[in-house]
Image 1 (cartoon, rainbow, N blue to C red):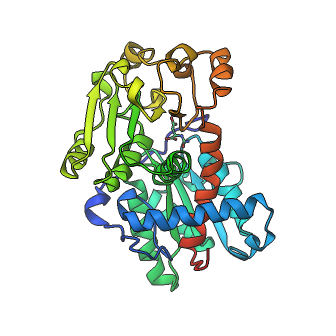
Image 2 (image 1 turned 30 degrees about the vertical axis):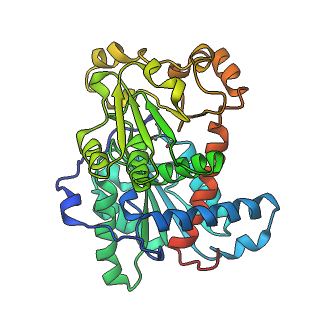
Length: 355
Ligand code: NCD
């Protein structure tokens, strides 16, 4: 959180047990987006095909895009800091011709800070908007929002959709969708590829969602390499899911075991804000630092990704400048792709059919 105190409530119930998100199963219209588990392989292929088309339309300044969400309203509700997710969703909605609302002055001026719970705040926002983008520090908060928006829908006769912008250390579905789109955009195909995720795999929600999505590519011979200090390993529930799907997983705390064979190197920030004890953070904060020297060990056609923001885990600003000039560094394209993927997600959940 930046300059905002934590909301004075926590999720009291485990909404993952109370609310089951619908599968997309070829039809995104009116469906909340709270976990990547809602998407099967065909849904991903549909979403990515539409993203290629929408990217091309944005690039040629096709103003008929503005008809897609004309008259529709998206509300943003961000209880954690964000630049990319917040602004790319806003830009996506504006480029589709929709409108965007948020509490004036930011969520610190929402009634949550008078003690209102999330269930009520999200329903208030749902009264005004067609789609709510929620980022919240509690795991499962987007499930809670979906549950209460469905209940609100019974009263209003229309159900606003929630799209998760990240729920604590849980998931970040739209980020994983844009990450996977970027991998496919760069590599065409995942067959036989090695995807290496490095850093805070315990607390990083982007790597949780991306791993679950890559599990959809069983049969493609994808190998996942997880590189982290022991204390920041990928959670067991995700490792179990990958094992059940037959995906090859290698865990190591030595980057040099895998960097030379990696096709995709996905670097992450140590999630400082998730550590209860500062000493625990400091003990591992400098463990994995990507620098131009480290990148020399990577394949000539590898791609280097990062969800950003980046800090010292990508070295100094001079290191950033050198890394950014390396054609293998694609994190700014990844970022731009985020807007295109979110345009498609918004358009499809709002009911567009001809993307
Ligand atoms: C990530 C997040 O918020 O989980 N950022 C993002 O959405 N692009 C990664 C991070 O904060 O490290």
